[in-house]
Length: 413
Image 1 (tube, helix red, strand yellow):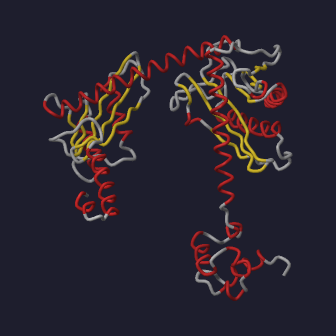
Image 2 (image 1 turned 60 degrees about the horizontal axis):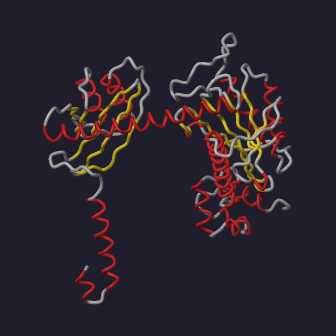
Image 3 (image 1 turned 30 degrees about the vertical axis):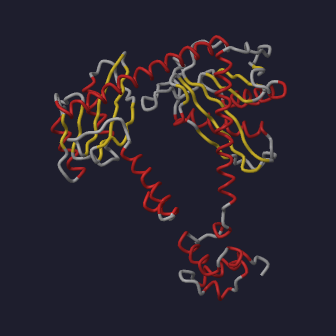
């Protein structure tokens, strides 16, 4: 680099400078390196108060290439080793394991796991629970990370539970809500209209439960937010009734062990005032839900100022929460997240429609034939102007399909 600079070859010097910076970044990845471990995945699991954290470190080329914390759900009567074994198998369901796997707790099914992973990988995989030396130090480092990550997770969960307890008091719920759903719509003059649902629970926002709804009802007047919300909630709860029926005797549905959240919400937050809330209430009344759900409408304050929101609940006078109430901040974050998610989905759909090609509307034209047509004519517009014989001359386009394409762009003929 310096030699290039001395000869005034500054472009080459800049290239070498960037290369040097990239190499420094690679060499500096992670705070742990290993002299005797070339390639390995390291698993350490920690349990506290019935919760588990599995910390996984990835070592390649004698260096730490990153780590990730997982929080497997398991019965609190199980030991860390009992949870680690099944977690390992689940982890490698869609991944190829390295030749060495280091673990914090020895497993009863040690040999069986080695055999299964070896058959999957096509080479011998060794699972070790080291007790001393460098490998044991690496496992202990991962164990410390698991312990600290679980502590942070539990602290966050405790804070979240405190907020949910405040929500229960503010909105006069019968119990602390375990699942909150927030709905919002997004469109531009009714085009590319979408509805969005976000979900929150004891562990905060649960993005894997988020859902979007492309508005399909063509009878809805463009920009009719009530009509859009009516369609979204009808589709949402019709499907929920079908897929997750409630025990009418107990009014309680089974929790989803896969997700950690109940399938049915305890609270619906609707971005809107009295009118929007009434529309939602009528929809749910029509569906004859097997269990009650609390509905709360959030009307924006004067000049849409945050902190001056008015809350609407059926049968009660509209009210506001104190300006510095943590519950108010929490509800604002939920509403803003629903708004962000709805707008993001709307923009993605609008962008997709912007790049839509007229050739996509013609049956029988897949990616290969579309590519051949565009290579031949340069654009869909040029295809629309082409003669029938020219279209039929394109490789992969039969005379019948050429006639279909020609007729699509020349309907009068």
